[in-house]
Image (cartoon, rainbow, N blue to C red; front, side, top):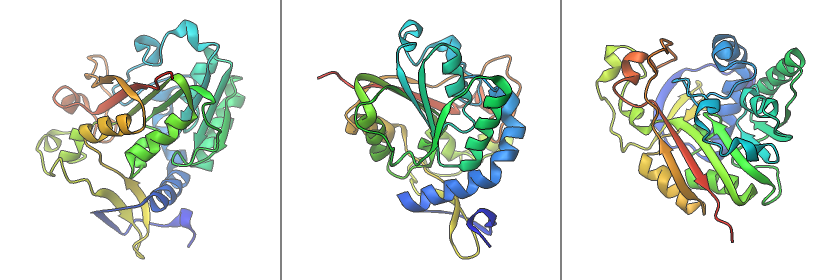
Length: 276
């Protein structure tokens, strides 16, 4: 049985390191990319920048900064999936956008959408924990649920993104809101009863019969993320906890209108790298 064919035999909470987490993400996304794009592609749109299941649209909120300045920026999207966000940036006139993702299959979907839309995105297969770029080459780094929920060392991952940012550059990323880890991954009323300690930082791990992880997601508290931003040499500019929009009736995993109007499902961090 190959890595890509590994089947989940057991679910647990336990520590998982950088290499194991990266391998598990590759396995899971290689296996699940087709289903994910079929289920969520219409919501994400072939050319669209949505920050999370609430449907917060970058075109309406401007977390990335002044649209007038983006055209001349060099942008990296970390964990780009099928490239919807990076392709949206290209459609806004941003000349240089690069997307990286750990999954080759996700990048094949990106190429498919390139051919369908005529809006192309430069992509590379790479791990967010080890970016294959020189120091200080991007004006903006962004990630919409793309990579940071899956890294064990939040500060190290943010430091890597900060490394490739130019002074004065901006990092904007979204993750599952840490409070969601207290509740079952259920969009209904059963998902409104707290079950797990907020401070249990062990990873959620799906593993095969040999105990090898084939899906890993990490929990960092809000305080962990704030300290990680500071530890990476960045300055926190904003922290957004989007409310569930009245016109969004979509259920996505544990996200739903019922839960989204009571507890936050997403946290969006906006940070900047100080100029010398």
